[in-house]
Length: 69
Image 1 (cartoon, rainbow, N blue to C red):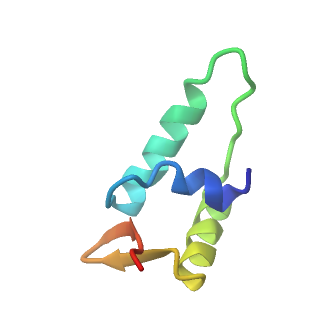
Image 2 (cartoon, rainbow, N blue to C red):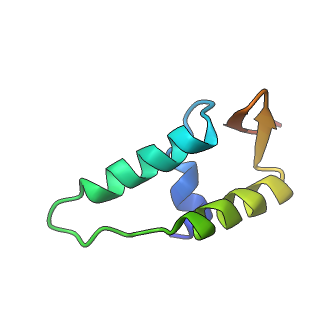
């Protein structure tokens, strides 16, 4: 799974960048029996940049959301 795809799995609804980052880390740290996939903050931001450039996500009033249509 790509980093952008991994990030998108946590974007069911609009969230702040910090809430999205915290949820991603909380989930990764809570995996049992599997080595957590640690994404650095730099890679997280690059993934958000790429998703935005591709038109997959948008930023509206401080919230990141999946873009519809």
